[in-house]
Image (cartoon, rainbow, N blue to C red; front, side, top):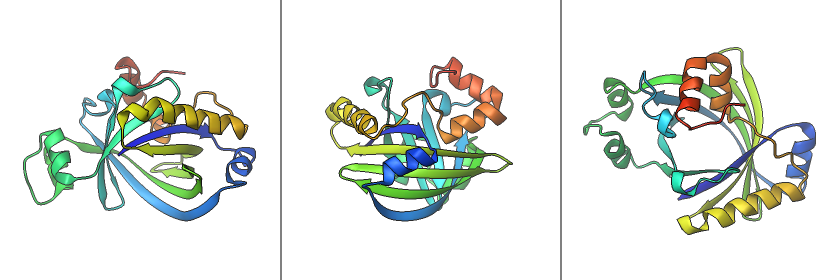
Length: 200
């Protein structure tokens, strides 16, 4: 599965536009803990290892298919595959094995997410509380595809959907990047220098 996603600022006006003809699927609260080495070995190549609630996920950017307007990630949830990709030995507890091999937690955030459906589009409206006095609100529009050759088509569909709903398409940081920008400038700088993100 490949996720094609675009983030947008979330304001009351955005929210009304996005939810007007959409069906509320559910409201969930997710606790995400992200892992990396002290020298940012994963995130500086746009790999994002996290535990969401009790599930392990490794999100890997698809560099060959990235466009300037959307983020494209392969999401790996199989623990055996995650171990292979991170060169971890077989063990009984993946979280402990991550820590034992130098992949340490660097951020935890709690996201209250309202998930909507509008045709093929999934719309997530997020309010994020971090492990400090820091909150963030954003919207995300997603399409999922199986064929990498459909990446550009899916990206174009997302942008067209956004435009027809009057959304602003200025640059916006994702929740983790926004936190790093504000609270962990060394990590943020490493991501800029590695080309994972653009500073703005």
